[in-house]
Length: 387
Image 1 (cartoon, one colour):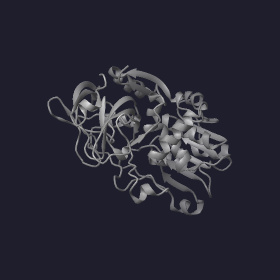
Image 2 (cartoon, one colour):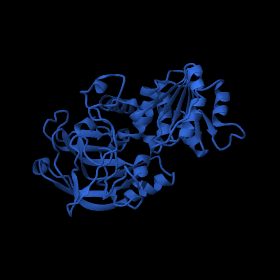
Image 3 (cartoon, one colour):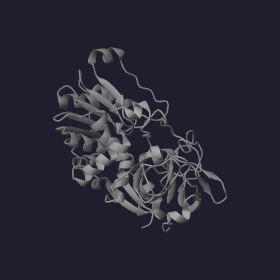
Image 4 (cartoon, one colour):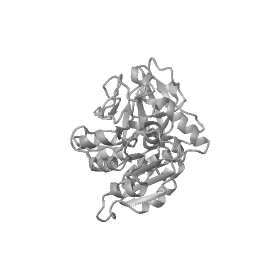
């Protein structure tokens, strides 16, 4: 659908196409919807392109709370500001922007601190509504409410996002690269760069070489790690991982009578300096913790486990081994300052983004992107709205 001039649409609902998920696990349906104008501190964005993340698939399959339908998924995107609500001065009509799921209000104690990216004014939650006003901006043509996803909902030609979830970017950056930093690549690179603060010459072990794990490898490479061990069940991931700095590979299914942690402890001579769990399994968190080095080793949890999962650690080991265990939401990044920094590193040919894009499809073929990711055939599939 052609872009509508802001002067004609400002303050009015816009009719556009969206890929609506009406039932869990069923193909998305392209339908015409209405997108309400932005309320105070909100921005309406024309999406240029979006990409599919595992979190979209996870919640698309989910049948129980916090699943809710009908819903518009998508949370990795790049777009153009169509109009802004009252009180918005950070961006203006025509700006190139990236939306993101984690808040960066710039006002609370946490957002003003260098120690945290966990906003307390607008704390992260999986809500079906806008973050500030707790209502939806989407309706179908029958007037039925369509629910939001992770405060972005980018599987729509137009969406509305709170200003705390948007950052302005350099318009010269290709949209199909910029969108990757909305979630996945930022999360992985940030986990190594910001959360772990990986040091030059260090040893890193990464459990799970999907997009997030590969992004962790890329972050560790940028930080100067000299040994980056990838752990996965698929041996093909080693060749892919080499592009992002992986130097050694452990096939978790071929460790004989040893655990993965025992193998890594042997390879590293006592454990890796930094271990990253990128799958979302409590058992792997424990394996990662078991093979990070005593005294200074850090284990960083990046993977999203199912609600209610528990970790079991020996308090004796916690006391006597002096290791750290920490979580990393959105890689510990301050979205409004760190995303532009990462994009500059891409323009300076330091950060690799091109290698993450394995497929590109038209909006009409969005279900193909789901098929590719579910089959493990893609890292990131970019979905173009108007190509």
